[in-house]
Image (cartoon, rainbow over all chains, first blue to last red; front, side):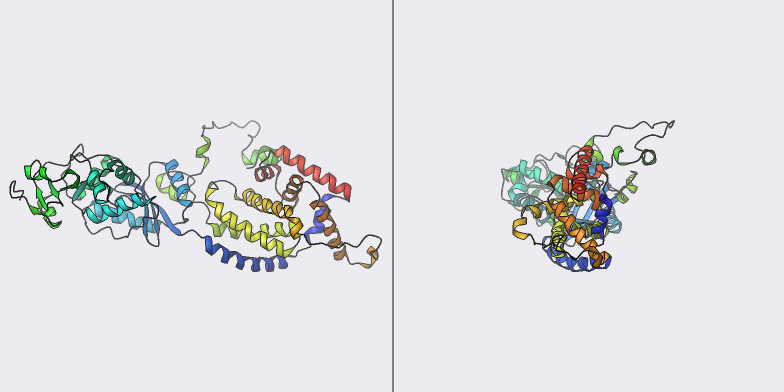
Length: 268
Length: 214
């Protein structure tokens, strides 16, 4: 007997209608089982923005990823990574919305970033704490040092770890990791490249050239421990612990953060 | 995972695996294996890359393949309860592992590989689950003339299934994929993680044994 006829004899065993019926029953059980292990959904899109190509992912809780894209390989790798945590749906409109918010923000609109942030992609409690502290403590128009941010997160000796946490920030711009600089006022690095950091800080009121290596001299330094802000190099400022230092683009911004001007250097 | 061996020569030419005689072969760029993961597409139109494609949503994958997987399991197992169980398990595993399937990789051999593995596990645990099917011995049956054709087929199917179940696992699985899923040898190789040649050998050995038994 030929194998094909043998196999055909098995083909008729289950009719199409029967298969449909069995399928219908099985689907219900599967859907219930799937609900228990389902990954959350995320809308994903690429948008051209003033900061370059952004790969944006949004969950029900907010922006979960805002990634500066380098090239196609980077895109593929990032999506492969995202797939482990989310069921991805392509959604250009959502991405364009984010691109638009970023455009307005870089254009100077302080209230442009409306979307909430979802830190689901942040690994580890410390990194999460650093990023939430950063959002809570450092307003627009101010920058903080790695060391000071570490202190705010309860680890004044952990400047390196803070840098690491910021480097892995999945939601740059929305979580303002560009507002963190070296203790002496040098600009420091940025995951998306220095030009983007300068672009963002400029949008927030710092007068920075394209080649700037440090926070400008007219920025004032503030100290939450003493509650005052000073010109750079003021001896009253030197008394404040270095690990509490923040820089403000202008005296007005320091006052808005609840600090008073120093009586020695009269920063205005 | 099609290879040259799966296709007839003229198909090879059409699919571009082999140049048509006289055609000038375009110079191929060397691409390291890691980048064979296709950049998701739709997205990429904006970036000036070609062939953008986000991996199929899982629902869509399931919509496309659930029918054939169910049919395959029914044929392989021959029992609707068991097939429904395996169906659910297959798709749950597929869902869990789906992120690890490269975006451009063929989902079909991958799905069948999961289904076949589950069938193998079930056969291994067979002592616990096996349902005894009493086949009337040939001399006890009333003779084929009294039976309808459909009935004859059913008996032949049960007999065939028993003989398939007696095959070594490797040959059985290769046979399933060849005759129940209609795979080419390259695809069988991809699903069972062996070469196309090994797949072909397994299928032909299985077929020879089944023919001899019938």
